[in-house]
Length: 289
Image 1: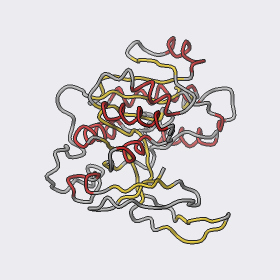
Image 2: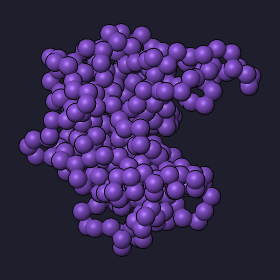
Image 3: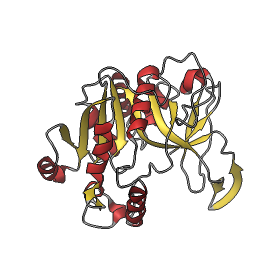
Image 4: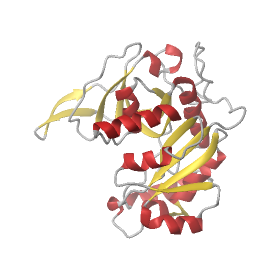
C-alpha cells in the first residue's frame, strides 16, 4: 500500500486506480511526522534527525530500559502465488525457513518482549515442534485482519508490532525505531518513498501522472499502542471492514500515522522468483539475516 504525506496538514490525499500500485486515501499530517517538522524519521546514521521538540527518541538511539513491545507475525496465508505445496513461512532460504529468519530479527531487537506468530491452523502442530517455547503460536483466520486480531488478543505489552512474516529481511534496528515511534505517537509504520512514476488509470488506460513527492510505499512492521489497535480492530469488525494494511485502521479511526523510513530490501517474499533474489540479498549481507 502507498500512503500520502502532507507536511503540516491533515488534508486527505485522493488517488485511486493507479497503475501498478494501490493508493490509500490517507494524509499524514503534522502529527504523523517527527516533531511536527514535516520530515519523517530518517535512516541513521547517514541521515540524522533534525532537532525537534518531539518526545520520540531519535532514530538510531539504542533502546533503553525494559522491552515494551509485543510482535505479532502474520504467517497464516495460503501462499497461492508461490504455486507449491509449501507455505511461505516454511520455504527455505539458504538452508533456513523464512519464518525462522524473521524470528531472528525480532529476537535481536531490544524493544521486543514477546513474539506471537499466527500460522495456518493446519500447520500449528508442525510449528510447535519446530519453534522454541518462547514463541506464542495462535491459529490465523480466513482474512489477514482475522490473523492480526488473534495475535493482538494475546499480546501482553504496551506496544504491538504487526509484521508480515514473509518480510524476513527486516533489520532489528528498524523494529526498535518503529516501536519507539509508536510508543511516543500512538502509531507508526515503516515505509519508503515511492520511486516509480505512477499513472492514474481509467478503463485500462493511463490518463495522468500522479505526483509522487508525498507518496510512501508501506512496509511492515506497523506499530501501535496495543489498546489503540485492539479498539481499531473491534470497530473494523463492527463495520465489516477488512483492510489489507494495518495503518489504514489508525488512519480511518484515529488520524495520521508516523512514518519511519525503512530499507529498500525489506521486501515481501511473494512468488517463486523471489527465492533467488532473497538468497542473493542474504549472501550480500554475509548470510547474517
